[in-house]
Image 1 (cartoon, each protein chain N blue to C red):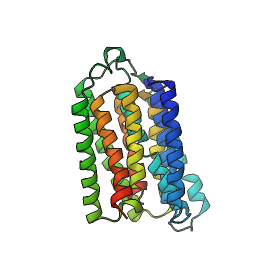
Image 2: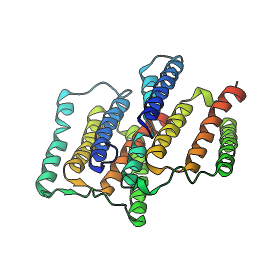
Image 3: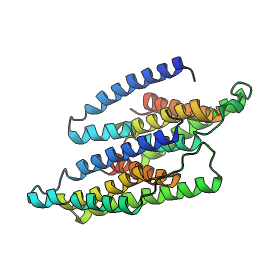
Image 4: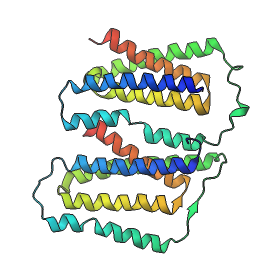
Length: 148
Length: 148
């Protein structure tokens, strides 16, 4: 199982979805509990519409999971993407904790990120998307361990 | 390597981590504490999956695991990494809080174990195994003998 690249990509995507649910649970622990039901129900629908739009636009499935060794340049670029995504995710979570302290806005942003992950899972399978997903999951876990 | 070896590794991991969970829940059974401990246990999982993704196309039949063992160099690496780890934890305790009170030993132990499994199944380098063993022995020696 751990030698097949496609199965590894699916496992990583499921892990990222789980960690996004976890960070949503963590961030909504100490915000104010006063909200209107309409806002909370309506906020994830924008992400669903965005996902349908992206799936209609990119109707070509790209899956590059060959059984070859990568070149050094590709590996270095993927590690740079991973580091950028990791730093950006930690900075973004700090920003959310700073001044977006209400449930509906947090659900909106997390649903948008979840939409991007599901789009990668369904359409683009690459080493670069794998690096992006890895950066998101690792940054969320680092935030939960050290800062929360 | 073998099926028996992996079974033994998994059994030791489960037993030690159940003790870790009980020990860290003595500080107070809250939902925040449980989330922190669980995320410290599954902490290195995304990075390890990414490394498996990179190394999955390696041809293992070319590597000779038995012929290349140099015992003197690998034992020197083990002692050096042991001393380096103990010095690093001592410097950490000077500036931050006590090492045994945080979730850091659980995170380091899970990083070491998962890297060990990756090294056994994919990379097969003796020097990396020696360095990881030195780090593990250093952490347990520091907690048993030096810290009170």
